[in-house]
Length: 85
Image (tube, rainbow, N blue to C red; front, top):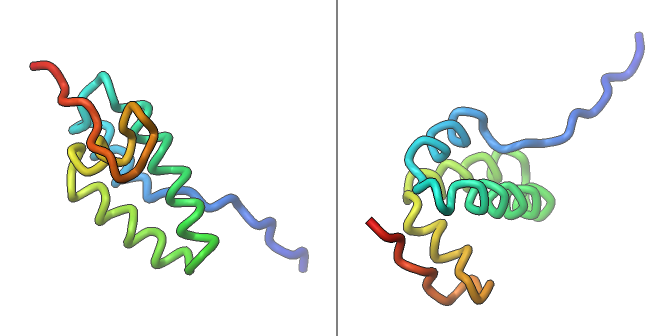
C-alpha cells in the first residue's frame, strides 16, 4: 500500500464561500488572502481542527472584524478604513 500524499491544509470551503459573498467587494480579496495566511499560521501553532474552528469564528464575526485586521497601516490593532456606501 502506498502512503497517502499529504494535501496542503486549506480553510473550510463553505466558510470561504460565505465570506466571499458577504465581504464588501473592495476588501474581499485582501480579506480572504489575509485570513488564509492567518489560518495557515493558526494550523501550524495548534491543530487543523482548531484552525478550522478559528476560521469559522472569523467568518461569522463578519467583514468588520476582517477589516480591522487588514487596515491600511497593516497593524492588526488599528481599525481599517470605513467602506463607502
